[in-house]
Image (cartoon, rainbow, N blue to C red; front, side, top):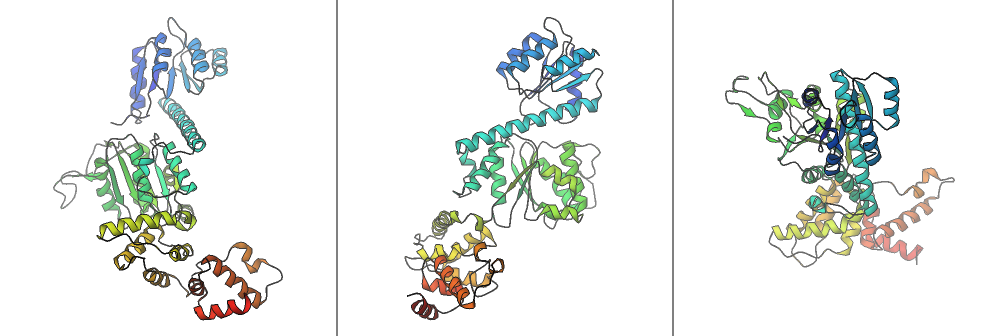
Length: 468
């Protein structure tokens, strides 16, 4: 079973029964990584040799008191959460411990819920500290620690590199990851990278939630025992079991039915599940990564997506940029796709004409990187000469756009005439559009004319008459 938390919880008490009791209570919640210590003299050596997530410390012990030990831990490891658990009800003692930096203070006998919530809160604080430190180090260095994990994603965009650095900073966290972004931006590639970054030894198992009804969802994820339903004579292992020790990736999470959302929420909360027809639960030793191209925030307002599930899923949120917001990646992506397409089709890599970059820079790419790849492959399949033809690109774009021109969006804000007073004259507006079209096309008259929805000859006459 994958250890949780990643680093051990150190239980310090001279009573072995107390140590075992705390361990049993915490194991019920999925916490399974412990070091048990009866001799307080061995605590500091352990801290020097091992990275510890949180310390549960008794105060009344032989040889070294817990109060003295607390002071030593706080001095050498100020960021390490220490939870004091003692049978002493002296208020002054509690005050001294709080001044020495204890994270929490509990009186024996401790209620199970109090113990569990205190330890989980300490683990969460420690996790946030680790992530913030890792993210800070990544940003300051400007480097990725594990660039190989992102080998499937071609980018040199700073925002995308920042996204990768954040993914590296959450690698040790067991909490779910939410990946959002438009169709075709590469959400599944990000999920694969997160799995590669993790130290989990199991598989990455992918389930597409789109169009799955509740019964199918339960059977797909949790499986069933023999005879669970008519036609289910043979037992089936669900995808959760297949992903044991690894990562479960749920794509199109925004399409889940409300009933299926409840089942997913329980899986995340309890870290266990019931195969259909089973009376005993199984432990879910998995990391959950989900993705959607839908905006889940307004879906909560309309009741289509549960707020509590969203809160669980967005512990870590990665929003992948659409291609139109990372156009500096276009040359890199074009050359990459040209090379792979030519190799797979047994052709020589064609030379992209300069006009291609101007043409694609002015296209909004509703299908994002996936659409660009499709366009490149289509053009290479039709390719016959040394230089790549623009014809297949022009056909694709003309079929995708609602109007003849290639202005998929409005002009930049400084050109939005509704914001200007007084309005420009028609002559001035036409002149501004021609200047903008020539700028976007790199002074290519054929392309600029296409942007404007006029013939090249008409544009040529205008330029000759008005812009000699």
